[in-house]
Image (cartoon, rainbow over all chains, first blue to last red; front, side, top):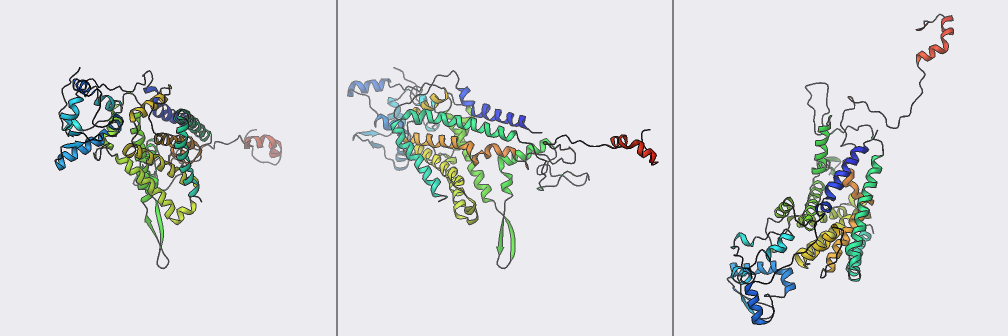
Length: 137
Length: 329
């Protein structure tokens, strides 16, 4: 007497249902990384003036570190009343999510949400800040 | 030596990945992970089916609680000494989810003189529970990299894990608990002389390997950040069987992936198989119903017995002559 059939059931549940889940969940879904849009009116205007599109810091830095930068900004403003940020190029910016960041990136759905939804990140920015009205070019 | 060999083995694995990934992204990003998963799945199934072919032993009642009695006034402990399948299910759930056996650990101590005392010893239970649960939650949380549209339950797990809202990429509680618990389990083996005496390289290696996995993961999330969008693209490529190597992923990620691949490939060959083995613990997964259900020895072969009827057939005439009574004339 042995219980091989119980073990087979256990293996099927363990491997097919749990470990196999990501495989068949993704069946038929294309592997598309999100593409961000940098074509809001404010960005286009900036490009016309300066000849290039650029953020407060280089793009690679912003992609990896924007959350830390925003966190630092929040602490500087809320705790120390420091409203001026000097970037690596020596330019000064007014620290404000709604008036600086979202002035250019006024397309939350096509910008913030793209990557955040892709990676299921739920930042709590907008539990205090107002979600901006979408402005499309 | 028993500690240094696995220690340098893990260091070597990290170095191999850091250097090797520079040489070939495809090897460390595609082929080694695929090979590791294949070894894991087929090795695991092979091992478990091999166990499944072995005979089930006579039920072993353990005396953790009162067994079912014929006397109605003696109350049965239905969880610790179950006599039904439902009770066994309960005992197994407690064992697998709450490590009830470890909870019963005791320690023996000699007090000054010759006074032998027994006390409860909960730290292995606590450390093991913290380690396994945080590992499970981290595993579940990683499914946000494994699925195109992340299902809501996984988002809830991720949300609860980071609800302290510390720092900018939010601090995960399980990251802290896992590294802490692994460190504790390692120090326990190193600092307690009795445990150190019975520990082998195969005991230290998984702990150090998992510490390496956790450390590289923590580094990637909080300190030397990697572009997560590209990382997910790579992982999704693997899962949809159309592998891609996106640009700009640092070697740190490949080190993490290589250590995880090592863990997967090492899994079926090692003590880590207790993941499957816990379900086959004979003292936990069998009901104590020896007096109700007959156990037939699985390796019984047919034994020829000479019955009384056959005996009488052999000697009937002689028995009659001797005046002995016979059952059949």
